[in-house]
Image (cartoon, rainbow, N blue to C red; front, side):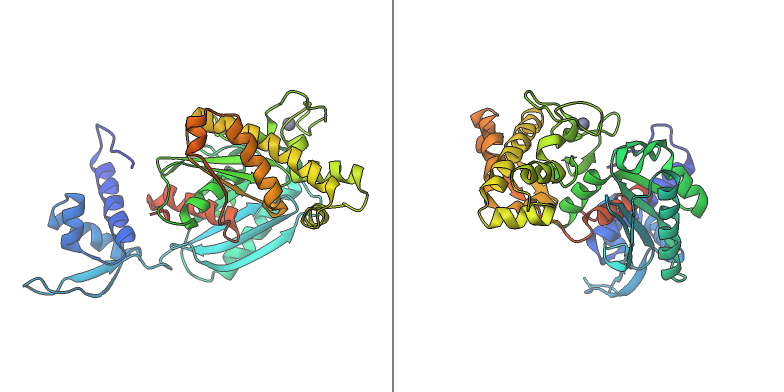
Length: 389
Ligand SMILES: [Zn+2]
């Protein structure tokens, strides 16, 4: 939870208390003013004033009366799901997808635009086109802001994409460009980080406080949740395991080095390696089908990729001692042999005492996992609210 600066101004105190009250209403979803005062420690008078502000701005609504405890039945409050909308974007590898999401994470409208090999400024224009389309579909409902999940190394504090090789972006101030164009707050996060937030939000309960979500598609990245919050590291690059070099790797990586994890364990790398052994394996779907059909070339390649991934996951487990690891992305379609290889190598590479409590499972992967997670990050950033409760 955010804490108040020691020498807070009156305005800061009010904003802080406002957020406390809003969060109490949002998390309880129907609550009385008296109950808010009890939960937050604020006076009844302060709560009434702050609730008044929230009612005026449409972030709270009165939804009937609760049971009486002797006196007058208390009026109950809720945060209307459609009180604000958020635009969420997933700047994926072959297409950009976006949606308008309400305050409870429900998708209202969505759209997708093919990337068609475009990159650089053209890819930025495609982001603008998508936001234009989504805002137009949203009618007159107030928009809270824009949450963007993008591949690559991203500084979420400044919204700068430091490096996204397939979009040909380097030190691109994407957050600033989008914010200036639309006059709205923007949060930009790495796609695996956004996906981890979505897994935490929509995964099975009880939700673990600590979680690692590893996404394996054309690239490989991890999102790390510590104490229920996304951990991004000092340079927002936490979980960038795809470009860790391993001994014995010989393939050149698109990052310019040799032997990165992505050169053996990403879907792209596995498809290429399998195709060299069996010319019929031409794409991800063909690899998945071959794997399920018991094709030995596909199996050998997938098991090798799974083992190298397991080795990288072992390093995360050893560094963080996190029990719950979820795997998401197209590679999870490869089936049991791949999953077994990941687990085998991960657990064999850490202390047995750590391995005993480690659970490596396939994630829930809700549809539009990245854009939902990006929208959730924006909501937390702007209102202090979290879907994950
Ligand atoms: Zn690399």
